[in-house]
Image (cartoon, rainbow, N blue to C red; front, side, top):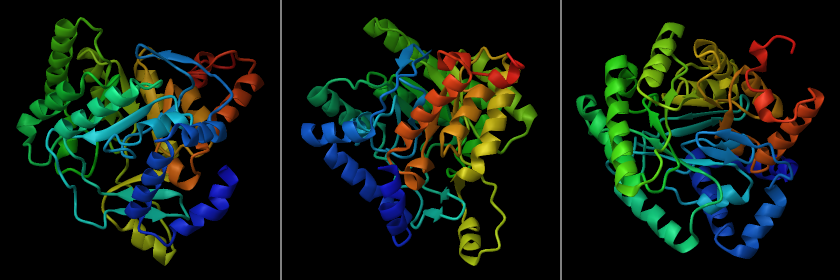
Length: 376
């Protein structure tokens, strides 16, 4: 189905508003995954036949590839992500308060560069309503067969001085449903959010979330949930090292590298130039090398002892392999689903399986950080 998508469906997206096309895609996947027969059909089409297990963050992932935040902001297509073969899915970003986000239009597409630019602004129903949505889902369908991650954002109306309360309140409300929580202080689309990447503010946010984590553990007699920090690609190596060390010292379980970038692709095409002039964060193919570079740096900073989730520009198995050998244990994609279609997971896992055979490896773990290990 990858080729038919690229030949017949993707060309029609050129004539649609990017955000509306996004909503239509989610709507159809939600409807198709709502019934057992159509859900089975999706699984037959898109589920990979290969298992490439990865043990990390207290869970066993069937393979390394999952959904990045931003695609399913309302947690309304959970059965769909499982049906098309992803090994985990990240919902959100979710904020303490409900918010409509930035004015429309706020999502733009460059087909030439396979890039998306968005300034959505954490539009979401708020953590209280998301909690209700997840509660209904779990009561109706039970827990998913894949881990659910929650991307924690800050409400626009919350001052940075109170950001720790915003993040931890959302985590508390969603603690029962999320398997992994990601602190997002790196989106470029909420004013002054990236200012929270400094050591003092980030430490305060993490500490507040850690307290929520421990309180829920003790009251419910359950293990702690892993907390990760998502970093921006638009910082110096010194800033990156400080954030990574802050995350480690604060008790976090890993790093997600990276969020969208405020940099742009140089272009002489008038249409693309107009797209690139839009404000917001850019994701997709132009980000692939930068995010891989950050993964490599984080691996070096931590001597490969701190799990890294690689996200940014993954469009094929080669990109995925580059991120794994740079040091990523798990992978995520967003833009790839727009430009490559729902078969991207199956294609990447098949390609990774081939890469393992070429290197005479038996597991993904053997490939993690391979670039740092010389010829062996």
